[in-house]
Amino acid sequence: MKLIDDTLFDKISNDIDDLDMVFDLNNKLDVFYRNYILLENYPNYFKEVSLLDIFYNKYYFFLAYSYLIQQENGFDAGLEQQEFKILEEGEEFEFIDWDIVEFISNTIKNLPNAKSLDQIK
Image (cartoon, helix red, strand yellow):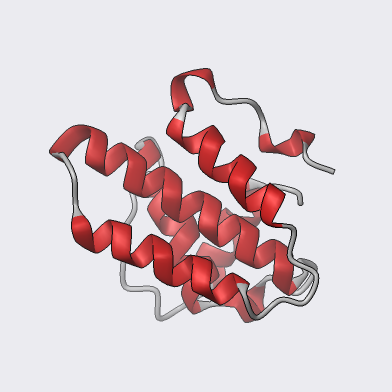
């Protein structure tokens, strides 16, 4: 699993004419949410990324967004439910590595001490 570079998200975001959301790319919350939205709604723009890596990245960016929102505002059952919905999508992949999913979850939940996801091979 390789974390998709922000420059690809920037390029895709600029290429999508009907993207009616405005993101403050100086705000980590907006960056994580934008990346999740692009992966969720426009996966066909990520031609050079495997569907499994799109899944891992979608989970990573949603979980990061969810974690930071809940750090600010407290527990949100809707965000937790969306996380489980994304995890259920992972069951569609024959070769999913649940250890990577667990690593992503553990990394996000320890964000102040997070390691780079680029270390996953």
